[in-house]
Length: 631
Ligand code: M6R
Image 1 (cartoon, protein in one colour):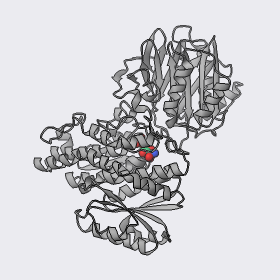
Image 2 (image 1 turned 60 degrees about the horizontal axis):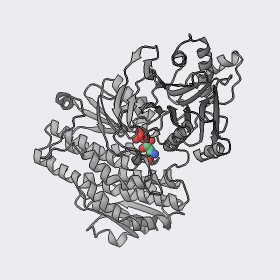
Image 3 (image 1 turned 135 degrees about the vertical axis):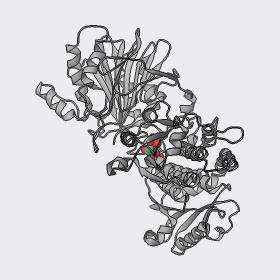
Image 4 (image 1 turned 90 degrees about the vertical axis):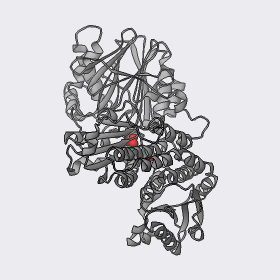
């Protein structure tokens, strides 16, 4: 397995392929609609009809491609492939949109990932007289495939044969899907360190970056491993080999959510729907893991009790919102297990040579299970012989597949780019891991664990209560739509919540926002506060450890004295904050370590409302992609 070197460029995209009996134009376009959240700089499609490949592609969102297709429809076909792009290599233009064709037009290719050695391969093609039509790394694959196809022995699986030949020459991380005008019943795909799943319907076959691409048609899926090539053929079905042609039996699984889960269901935005789904997502993540007496049963954790007892250090490694979940997890893990915990952004982890050994547990948190920075951190940890536990939402994705143990969150598909239910269920999963470790290592009495478990069981209702009161938060959001900057303050577990509130606002509303540890404010950041600066303060429970509550109340007074407009999130019954809150958002009383599950929710709603008021695309914020599959 070859890891791409740091700082490399590539594509992060949505990929769809179809061979069957339906109108491929419709099936592929519908798949692209469901995958648009993976990339939306440009989109394209190709079909094979009457022995020829025809493509359509357009820069911008999928709607632009749909307009092109309405004006100039592709020919009717039952085989096709499509792509939504998040450009990193070559600008988001029509000519760089996928699919890319070989010079003779015989082969079409779509791609997600990085072809590391594309410059050398491009020079080689150009030396052979090929003229390139784009600035992408992808196009070399199309030219190489056409050449390998011409050189491959005649036979049933010539395109697959050519794909294997090409893949053996490619360096980096990639998913490739190819179609040949000469093989109107076959699509061939390859994957290395980049996502690809196969869907199996009744006489029809699908390829997708994730199951959302085909869930409207089938829930039967095949998982592909590292360095594998799959051929889907109308008659022969699914055939998987390694890059050398050795036969491979793919793992089959049934997707446990249906097409409705990936629909907006009457909401204006997926994000709003996903926020509303949080009580259920938490309940589903707890389901089956808590025994009748409150004891924990985590049978997906495939590490022996002895291995768990031997752990003397935990690293939590993740990116973005998942990293914030890790920061919160540290408080609970250390408090419950007394094992030292370090939390680190995945993109930094392996580059500083962390001290890891067999008694280190590395917890990798990732909603998508495909984030390249997290995957590379995982591989580094395994190389150093550490144990790796993945907390992940996407079944069958790369990160859980490569981990020693997995705890799945059951949030269902998260389509909005901004993570919401993914985050809350990650928190719940972290709590479960902490309690499990405490249980196995005898760090807590049974009744203590049972009491925390009872608190966990109350979380879905607590989140539902918060959601029921969000009208005033939405109104507040509308009044903040013109703000230039918004600050977020928190202490203890409220500090990572402040970071998460600021991230949500930045990514959705494009407003400058920062989260601070409230106690740090006086060490510098307080200088930025001016008359009217909105400051959101996450107030810990008055029952929290030490006197942190009183200190945060003082922090509110400090910023207010300097002109801040204070927006205070505090639990019911906390009267101390009332005199200093310009806006008061109440949340139900929740034990301190679990409080982030409820205090985060108003921040999600606030960011969503501010973005919507500013007329922005809440589900697909500019410059972002849902699943960041490049480093
Ligand atoms: O799929 P992952 O959880 O690994 O994704 C990690 C981050 O890219 C992700 O949380 C990102 O920060 C979100 N856009 C936040 O809303």
